[in-house]
Length: 159
Picture 1 (spheres, rainbow, N blue to C red):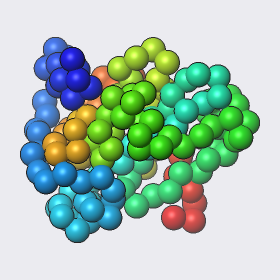
Picture 2 (cartoon, rainbow, N blue to C red):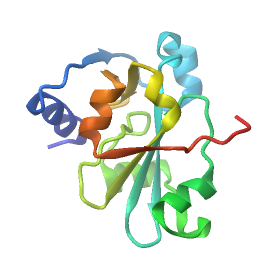
Picture 3 (spheres, rainbow, N blue to C red):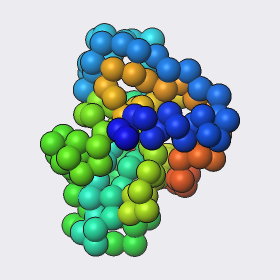
Picture 4 (cartoon, rainbow, N blue to C red):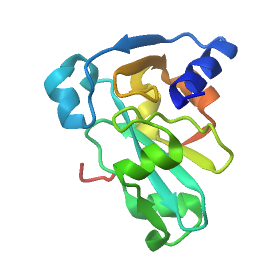
């Protein structure tokens, strides 16, 4: 079962209301801005990291925000040098998400999800579905309830 299928099954099994928006492939925030500008204001981008101890981290924040890496490492209980950004190839090979389709879903026990606290007031957000040709529209509170994540302060103050 693909990550996309796992996410849709999870949402359906938990009776979580969502909308699925099919679109042209997008892999970056810049491509979303160019091809799907209506998504940008409510976009929750998810960035994948590997922690030196074998865990994975999916960090969700608003589309143009930047991650405070020291804060990220602190939440993982490790030094900043123990948290690595994953390459697009590694994201697909190790986590099963298409690049541009990464969503904040802990589908395996070694995956940690952290969502930036600024997302709390956004209502409906658009996030990755596992595929870069489909975006989920989901209420942030429903997402937090089912994604296995925690709301924390992740965005850099200078963004």
